[in-house]
Length: 493
Ligand code: NAI
Ligand code: MG
Image (tube, rainbow, N blue to C red; front, side, top):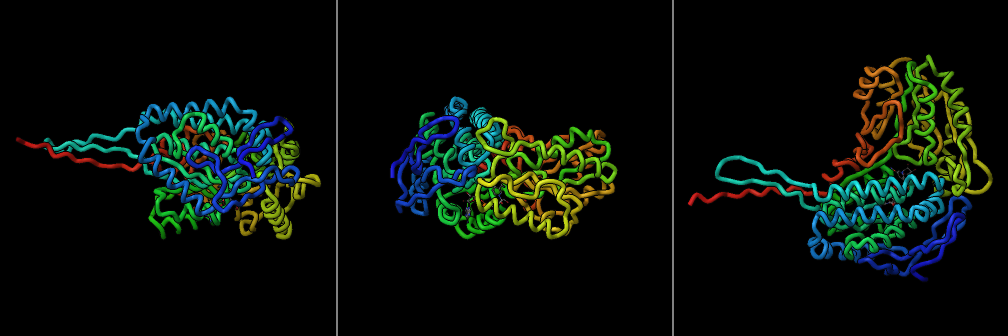
């Protein structure tokens, strides 16, 4: 099978790389296997890509190690920054192609996908700016010594990303790792390998030396597990399910105690209090759960509404959700496309069935949308109780629950009654209430009168079982540097 193929999308035709990207070359996997990636809009294969497994990971790690100790070490921090900003420029230059790839492979609306490209370029440029501004400290302890710290790269970083934001997660991961001088073995998600391979081509074009970024298409139990257990990978960064996050941490512990950062699931509360601007709150609540078809780790899936506005809220929210345009990702008006895969479709539909069976009220949706593709209607459940599975477990689809609360205190108590702690929101026009509730909620991000507004300057990550470490902002740099203390004794003669 070849290493490149012309792919036609409804928007444009482009050349799709298919190989594993190792040492700046596209190559076949050692085992010679390939796997197909599916278009979730019509359930048909798009192309087959080469599949990497343990042996390919080993080869990629060797390439990354030798770049780390060789050419990449000679590249100055300023030049690293220039490479990152150049890559950002190339993402923007190819925005139409990259957005079409995401719409085709993931199913997200092409207009949303363009937003992902812009945010990815912004993220890379932001970290490009950091590259030559990462300093240690000088520490005065006494007159006979000089002590200083160096922020050195951790080394070879394994990065495992999911399918919900294929390009954006790629950018979030490589930005801080490259700014701080590390090298990378990236494994993309098996459902969405295409944009990562396209960016690999741009990485070479931007001028990164061979071996600095290596991209493996492949499966979790083979390529992903090989990264987590590898003896010569110094750090692993993972975004995905809590279940797999635990396995990765175990593998890291059982192998070389590589550093671990995890960005996992959530069941984020979105609180609407009686003094909220209801129309505005509903816009954010709608975006909070239905953006990206509900496939967001920080989705506002548990909506907690004060009893004083509960009935009015339900009436307006139903109306608003029914206006969301569900359909073909290549229609520029589309807000919600198909779910990413048959597996995710089935998983979500089984949660919907479970919610109906448990006696929750379906306010709107609750069924398949159309007859082809993995489409699900925007679904609102109301009159739920805390013990219901749909209230407890991450659904990762266009499905939310609306719960009635009687007070601010109850809202906080219910909001925190979860093992997760990724995000939350409160809608109120009272600044005191806003800050009081924000302080009381155990979550990595709290939005006041908005939702899902991420920005590469703002740290993002989870309390509790939602993760370890922070991505984005200056905080992410800490995950990718080792601090070395150098103590110099000053000779008295
Ligand atoms: P997953 O956690 O299995 O997959 C995420 C990534 O991990 C993929 O690249 C996958 O190949 C890799 N992976 C899987 N098993 C692995 C292993 N044993 N060792 C190393 N890497 C491994 O998630 P999946 O099955 O795609 O989705 C299941 C659920 O996970 C979703 O319904 C959702 O609840 C959650 N999820 C959360 C995401 C987030 O953004 N936090 C993203 C994707 C899924
Ligand atoms: Mg796909």
